[in-house]
Figure 1 (cartoon, rainbow, N blue to C red):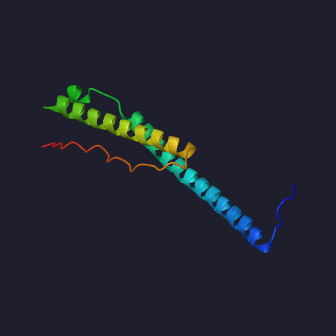
Figure 2 (figure 1 turned 135 degrees about the vertical axis):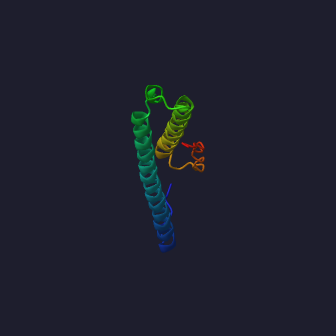
Figure 3 (figure 1 turned 180 degrees about the vertical axis):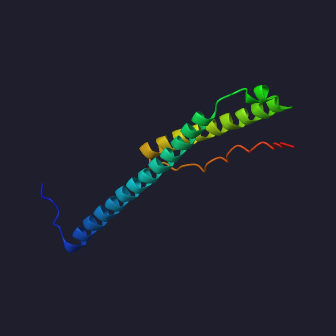
Length: 118
């Protein structure tokens, strides 16, 4: 069997197809890099909150009126923020390994509790 002749038109088609494939690969690499940056950002936030979150019982030792409720509210809020950043870290970790899939918009961060100190 004889192969078709490579005319100028066919060479232009081959080159155009190669250019499209190279551009698609570059786009996927760029997306992967941006997803890795977002994953690392959320990982740092999660680690920072994990280090900062320690139920201390400080309000009991200082005898602050209503301090237990305040501390419990703050602990719940910090824990919900940790879970939020953990979920986003996992989302972008998956997105970095599968950059050809669309990524859903990030959910809003948990609302800060309305705490009054006075």
